[in-house]
Length: 206
Image 1 (tube, helix red, strand yellow):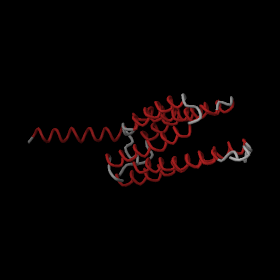
Image 2 (cartoon, rainbow, N blue to C red; image 1 turned 90 degrees about the vertical axis):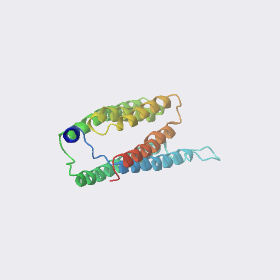
Image 3 (cartoon, one colour; image 1 turned 90 degrees about the horizontal axis):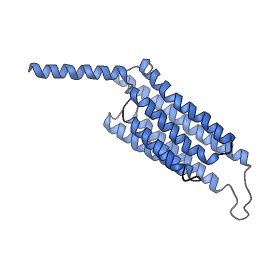
Image 4 (cartoon, rainbow, N blue to C red; image 1 turned 30 degrees about the horizontal axis):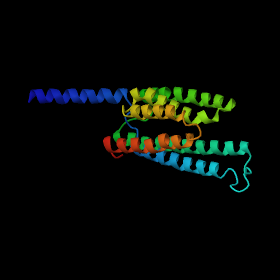
């Protein structure tokens, strides 16, 4: 009986330490929705690119600069929607579990996630500057994967697997230039939905 009480106390101590060192209010549902947003964005982008040239005359229907801004706008809308959804749903989950959303651990999580992501954003601008457009989609996958991997020590460990998958997928995509959007849809769309579903079922349907 005494041994069972000790085990229970040890389990409670480990749980408290885990909560203090990791941000555990990530919402699985937000991952699923982020994946859906990415798939919709990728589908719209692919449709625009496929209809960029008139199939009969071969004449461009849109100026290249306008096309680039349009694709960038789609990517930004997907990003903003994903961030807002993650913030709202994680806030609700944190409130429900009695955890603060903004504290020392969540700050460390954000910083460790943002550094590789910001670096990747600057690197993609350099690729664009040098007209290496085909490497932008693979690079976003690689740096996003590195961001997830870097942040995983401050949140649910499962996120490291999402990071590793996206890094590998990005590296593979560098060998299939011209199909970047499809890899982008797979990494940010399909794998995000799978990851979100696992999180949703494993850590509570909140």
